[in-house]
Amino acid sequence: MKKIRIGGGAGYGGDRIEPAVDLIRFGNLDYIIFECLAERTIALAQQKKMKDSKKGYNELLEYRMSKILPLLKEHKVRIITNMGAANPRAAMEVTGRMAREYGLNDLKIVCVIGDDIIDKIEKYMDFEILETGEKLETIADDIVSANAYIGTAGIVKALEQGADIVISGRVADPALTLAPAVYEFGWSMTDYDKLGKGTVMGHLLECGAQVCGGYFADPPYKEVPELWNVGFPIGEITEEGDITISKLKSAGGLVSRETVSEQLIYEIHDPAAYYTPDVVADFTGITLEELDGAVTVRGASGKEKNGKYKVSVAYRDGFIGEGEIGYTGSGAKKRAEMALEIVRRRVEPWRDKIEEEKYDIIGVNSLHGDITGLNPKEPSECRVRVAVRSKDKAVAEMISKEVEALYTNGPAGGGGVRQHLREVIAIASIFVPDKDIQVETVLWEGGK
Amino acid sequence: MMKLREIAHSRTGDKGNISNISVIAYKQEDYETIKKSVTPEKVKAYFSGIVKGRIIVYQLPNLWALNIVMYEALGGGVTRSLSLDTHGKSLSSLLMDMEIEEEENEAN
Image (cartoon, rainbow over all chains, first blue to last red; front, side, top):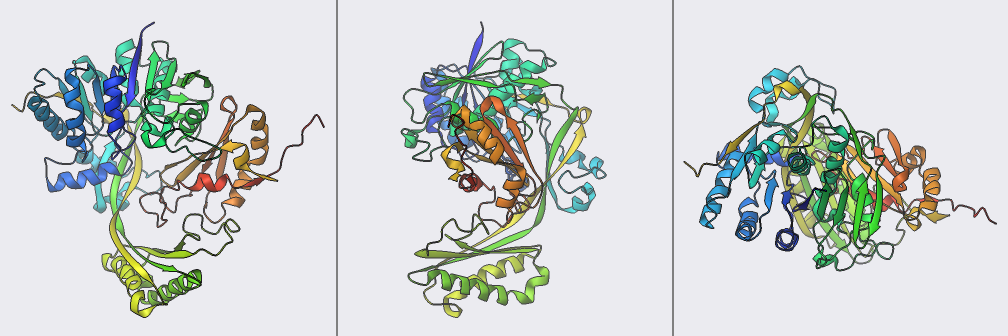
């Protein structure tokens, strides 16, 4: 039976490259995917593109390619990635030029475009924002980017064109993996059970080490060997859709029933309806079998998609200002509480311009809020943190200044002030009809 | 009483303002216990200061697992939240500290 091996080369935009290099060298792979886009990443990339039309792709693209491309002389592994972010064409140009520098003159590089619909956003002003129920026009002046989660079609077409490297912008994460399975096995785009199975493998590979023991260790309950050297996953899928997840024997970490279970349920809602542009995958029939450091995943299925594309619209939504200061020694918590109360009173004159404010003591309640009784002991050091969100940049900035002012105007022994200000890029989602999205591929022609 | 952590493991994920937490039994025989112990009501009470919206608990019996989906759980979502942990990633460790009833051994 025909099968292919796909490596998961990145779990997020800034992930480590060393485990991916090992996979290409020793993994006997047919493909490696690099999933590098979070919900907000593409908006930040779009802002960079607006400043410089040659930018707006993943910031580690050149670094990653400098490690990967030289390996392609000896290892015939095809690369599929969404590192194009807001600018897949520019990412293709850069990769093409680098490939030539490494003497890879026959390498075929194709980018996938069509996810970026910012030019057509006016059409959708009447559409409802899923998160708030309001119309899109309520945020019209603040929109930064609009990208549809496209499916496998563009990547499959690129592979049919003989691409060795496929670079996309926003695609549904599992599509990076499902596309080569569709291409290699000739799966029909209405064979929803197969598409569901391929989607599940994509879901397992798209977070890199997270299925191989990364983000898992919790001794003494969950032990992970050699976590410092944790490997990235290899997914093998047959033309029937049976999946086996493993890792290199030389890598640290582990692939077990437990690691695969955690990753299967990661970031899903209804396990019977995992929505993608190609299929609604059903995880409820999945069974796992652990054997010799690998896990076989069977029984996923799927249903017809809903005929719509989800579009992430990013918009500017004010500013967040933060300030921190630390206290230690006896009475640290008492002084930290006093510091918070002082700042709370000092921001009173600006309160009508503050949308939300938060007062934390790191080491006491910053992560779990009001859940009490977990750590009754007095902490030996405390860090005070104040954060506010405001439409007014000056107000957000002011709060961090008030924390700094605790040096000379606050309780005894405060130290280590840190201040931070950032613009909020928020996400509004809308659904647009299938027919509105035209996915295309562009072949690199040597910068001609 | 015992902590959930004694019989189950967990990971948190996020999408917008929605947090999901898996609760997975180490052993098949403990699946019924977690199913009985981890109800939407109990989770809502436990996370009362954090989760503002509704909670749905999905069952995955093949995986001996539950998926807890919590709405309005991330202070407005990853991009707008003032929380230090904007993704709510640390919530799984917190949930594992929840106290549950120990099952009586039926043979006794």
